Amino acid sequence: MSKPISSHLANGNKISLAGFTPQHFRWEQRGAVGLVTLNRPERKNPLTFDSYAELRDLFRNLSYVDEIKAIVVQGAGENFCSGGDVHEIIGPLTQMSMPDLLAFTRMTGDLVKAMRACPQPVFAAIDGACAGAGAIMAMASDLRVATARSKTAFLFTRVGLAGCDMGACAILPRIVGQGRASDLLYSGRSLGGEEGLQWGFHNRLVEPDDLLEHTLAWAAEIATGPSFGHAMTKRMLHQEWSMGVDEAIEAEAQAQAICMMTQDFHRAYHAFVAKQRPVFEGD
Image (cartoon, rainbow, N blue to C red):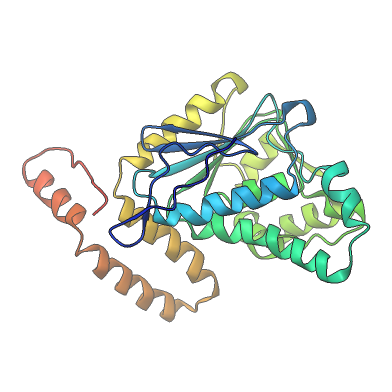
């Protein structure tokens, strides 16, 4: 039996992940970094109705978790995620009514919303197949580390659908540009590791054997930073997509003034004066 996220709230709206054991993916806490492993390697880690929902709920609840400062998402074996399971999702979808189909597509979109809304930076460790909903999860992450053999494909048109799935037409152009996003979303072709690095989809490219440890180390490095400040950076990166320049400058002025009220800001100043490295605590 899986153990769900604790419903115990401390100080009004805090959740503990102590003992959290999800049913449809693996979860580990390594220091301040949470590690999500999509764990169906024999099928290249496809998603199911249940894993979509459980992942959505995890990312939603991370907004109330203090002890986790960064998240790494990986796939078991030599693949990230092959997308929605053909037999457990695609087949049943062909038999559903329009209201049920819309409920499903809204639920999958809620996973992306939850990944973008959680305050922790999300790192995707991408190897092998990264297709369909897997490519969307990689896209929705904040930072992506990949291997040269990785193949990322937004292959929705290959199955007779539109490329506009789970926010792809909004988010992907902001990562790689409108023309390159159009190439991927119309064709459904695979984006290799080297090309992905050149296009800016991947932030770093490493050897397969180094992928997880490199990504965890990078996440742990970010996790030592000012987590309140990181959460504000993530929120501004997301919100300012739809703002004009003047509106964005005002929003950042307000955000930075709020950050200047944190103890981490004061810790950084006092550490600088003492010629020491600040130790941030997220308050």
